[in-house]
Amino acid sequence: MRVFALALVLVVAATMVIGIAGLPPHGDPDGPVHTHVGARYLEQGVAETGLRNLVTAVLLVYRGFDTFLEVVVIFTALVAVLALPSATRQPPPSRDESAAASRRDTDDAVPVSPVVFLVVRLLAPFIAVFALASLYRGHVTPGGGFQSAAIIGAMMIALGLVFGREHAARLVPHGAKAWLQALGPLVFAVVALVGWRLTGAFLGFPADEAAHALREALVVILEVAIAVGGAVILAQLFMALDAPS
Amino acid sequence: MTLVGLDLDYVACVVLFCVGLYMLVAKSNLIKKVLGLNVMETAVFAFIVTSGMIDGGQEPIVVAGSAPPYTSPIPHAMVLTGIVVAVSVTAVALALIAQIHAHYGTIEVDELKELP
Amino acid sequence: MSVVFDAVMLLLLIATAITVARARDLVAAVVKFGLYSLVLCLVWQHRGAPDVAITEAAVGAGVTSVLFLLTIAKTARSERR
Image 1 (cartoon, chains in turn yellow, orange, brown):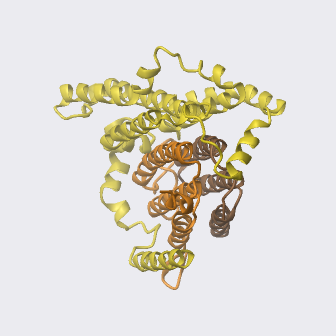
Image 2: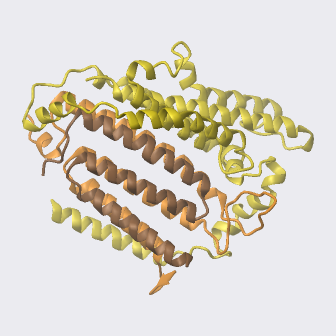
Image 3: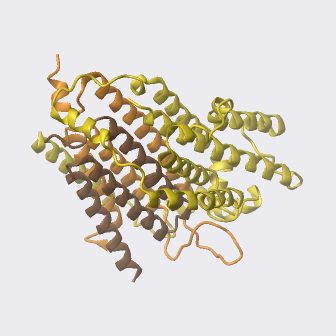
């Protein structure tokens, strides 16, 4: 099996190296990545979208469909994880010593060290402020929807690890949990329909100068939806996998 | 930097991809396989972002102190989407692994193949 | 200078990926994967992709590693062979 795996890896590596030899060298200003659509996004991106962070402009305005379907992807992953009853099943009688050993490992699991406890509690407000700043300034500095979602999600996971399951479950309000998880796809669908109403194109943004404020408002709404929805989904993935076996 | 006509940054991405592919194919533990899948995904992201670089370029954020040339923003957007998809796939794979262990008691592929 | 830094980072990346592959204790493998994710975040920053660096830092160490550790707590602690 190992020999077969090594042979396969060598064949794939050789194929990819042969393919790389035909690529233009990276960093060449005349390469196709910089001269086709990319050049137009760089020249007219700020004027057309009103966003100075061109990555956010590409994500939300120029390639909005990709972002729409990607929030649907992570929502679907959450649905798939919640649909598996692995959390509620008892582990079977030990097949071998490794399973029993792993249970012994968790039986005398180490409680949370006071250093970790203090550091997480101290840093959590600053992490939250940084995530909100990254979200709010995401159109002029590096930042934006996904970054804030990842930071807030990681912070909620850290709090969940430190405080325990019962307290962590209170981080997301229980009644609104289902709506917050679906916030990404729902808000994207609403903005897409609004764009259809305004411009005739699904998920279109009004292009004229007078609608500048409306365009910025739509972008901010989308970013907040991505951030909140993504963070709640990440925290919920942690809660689902953390449930006692 | 290039060596014998090959772009070394791209070759590094190929090597990473092959390390991940070896983990995916050769290791018997399912969690190791998912780790290998993650390494493969990050190798592809490295390749995509490297392809968008430009000589003397800076990050694609048009503020007062910046001037062209900018690195292309399209690969960054694709990689951000890719990172989220990678997290989704990893989460579902890990939930499935927990389910397999709860049902069969093992997560080694060699032992799973011998089950009736 | 930048070329040397770039070469060292890429070599470090490959070396950490190989240590992830060779680790037999799964918790050690996940910790090394967190280290791989940190080196990758520095590579993103060096390549002029700060958005990707922020996301990789938060997702690689914060989310993916924790999900792996939760699954390891429920299943096996070390690789069998």
